[in-house]
Length: 245
Ligand SMILES: [Fe+2]
Ligand SMILES: [Fe+2]
Image (cartoon, rainbow, N blue to C red; front, top):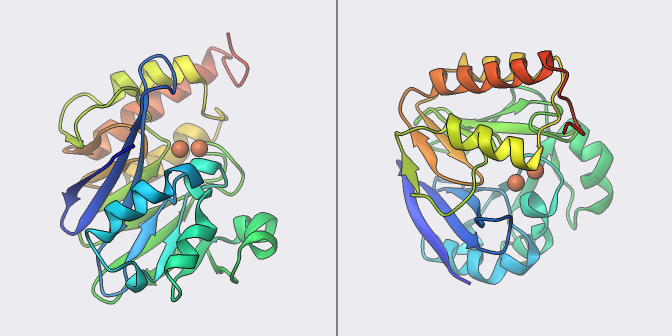
């Protein structure tokens, strides 16, 4: 198993591991490292991926410098290896939204988490990341995303998930592959709030989308987010919610 490293925005690194056995075409599992005065990791990966992912991260920074560990929601690919990361990074603090801390981390995390309010900023020294509560988008009550202000990078978690092992960064079509994957996997909890939540993300005017499964995107990100919101609104209008055929 090999984890590739690509810089997708200034000092924002994508750590990508392709698992060919997931789904018919395989799937990438991507974590993101923000190399700042206080480095931040977004997503831990599954425990089985930890040796490869941590080796890749150690090519960018001394892991003992890692100061923050964050993730979108409680699932194995988002936070399975949390304990392993905290072990190799003794000064790191796990941070999550208030709901996620209340329903999981306050009880399960090896060290006390820092709970963030919606819109709260973590100051990384020379960079700032903002927590955005997005309950049930893409899925899970505790779901939230991060936005890095200097590079206008939105960490989208499972939004825009697409299959295969595409390039680290694209300016091409993201919505087509993402809607195909949604219709195959049905991973998004589609509610009346889904489209509106995604449009709020577009209003941030991001320039880069850091996608957890598939290519990241650089280009007209607000337009791409708008198209994804339209797709989910259409799904809802069709009455095709969770469990849809
Ligand atoms: Fe997920
Ligand atoms: Fe995921």
